[in-house]
Amino acid sequence: MSESENVLRKVPEITIGFWIIKLLSTAMGESTSDYLVFHMNPYIAVALCGVVLAGSLLLQILVRRFSVAIYWFAVVMVAVFGTMAADITHVVLGVPYPLSSAAFAAALAVVFALWHASEKTLSIHSIYTVRRELFYWATVMATFALGTAAGDMTAASLRLGYLASLVLFAVLFAAPLIARRLWGANEVASFWFAYVMTRPLGASFADWMGKGYLGGLGIGDGRVAVVLTLLIATAVGIAAAAAGRRTRAVEETPLIEIALP
Image (tube, rainbow, N blue to C red; front, top):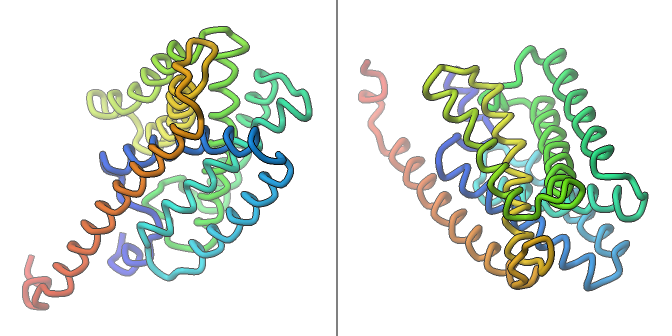
């Protein structure tokens, strides 16, 4: 990647910190969505979250450089709204979780196919044009809806309960990362498989903590949502501070040092 492409890239580096915040956001989206839907008019909740989501994505697309806070705010809103979309499909429309999971998986496959046909790559490292960024966020939305439906399917439809689902998706999340490190599995495929698994993994954790059924601890969705929001804010603050230090270090590096091999 050229230096100009690296500057224009609108997504974060894939580090341990990235996966931590991603998992926290998926869990927070689950608990927040459930709390809002059950404590206010669900149609108003969906409409409000849809408006905030649209605003967050528009802001993310319009900014010229990567912003830690703006990016993760958009991810959090996708997490909340994606959960609502999957839940509405089941609760309001009456679509069984296995069927909705298959439908969302098909939608994700279509997005991947269109993205690859258009850009010849699915790499997250190539997100430096508006069109690729639109494909990226369409993929993110599809992964959240799919992950929500899949997590509910294993916990409720297959009657595994939340804790067993948590263990199952933790194993599935770790598998491609281990395969990549030990056997050199394809980087792009490993990333996206792990990315999809973060959603049901985080959602299963949030439901296990918040719900009082299917083996859950019954702490409450609201309490879980607040704690996870505080953790996300802390992690994003740390990531933003680190990004700021890296930017200042680059700006303060003499040009003669940059030019040296």
